[in-house]
Length: 266
Image (cartoon, rainbow, N blue to C red; front, top):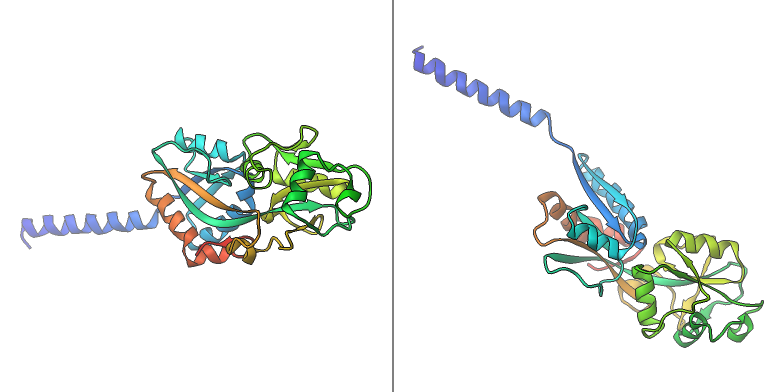
C-alpha cells in the first residue's frame, strides 16, 4: 500500500472513531419552565410523558404566576413561560402557543349542600353583596371568600369573566397558589374559592356553574362558562429543543396527556 493509501485509511479510521465517540456520549438537555401554578399538574404530566420519549431531556419546572413567566422568558432566565391568562400583555419578541383549555372551578367544602351557582350569584358572592350562605340556597353562617394574589392569571380571568372587570371583595382571604386555595377550602366549611380544574380532588366539592360541570369535555368545547386557555410563551425563535417540546405538547401524544385533566385543543 502506498503512503497515500495509508494516509486516507488513517483519516477514515479517525472519522469512524470520532463519529462513534460522538454517538456514545449524547449531551443531556434541560428546559427551564416557570409561571402560572395553574399549569403545574399538567406540566408535570407532560414532562413525564416527554421524558419517556426523550430520556435525555429534563424539564426544570417552577411556579409563580403568569406575569412572572412572561418576565423570565423576556429576560432569558427561563425557556418556557406558563400562562393561564392569554390576555396578558406580551413583549413583541415573544410568541404564545395554546396547549389546553381549563375550567376555573368554584369550590366549597364537601359538607356544603350547595351544588350550583349562576354567574350573577357568583359575582354577588365574590363582590361581598351576598354574604350569607342561606342567601344562595345553602345553610350555615357567613361566607368566607377565598381569592388569589395580584399577578395570578386565574384571578385575572375570574375577575374578567365573573366579576365583569370589577375586583373581588377586599374582605377576601388571598392565597398564593391554587393548591393553597384547595387546602383552605377543604379545612373550612364556610369558605368558597376558585381554582383550575387540575387541582380538583376529593377534599373539596366543585360547584356546577349555570348548571354545567367543570369537566375536560366541557372545557374543550367551552360549554362551561368559566373556561380559559392555558398557553406557553417562548421567544420568537426558540431553541430546537424547546420547539420540539412545543410540537409534542400540541401533537397527538401531548394532547392525550392534556385530555386526562384538561380540555384538549386538538
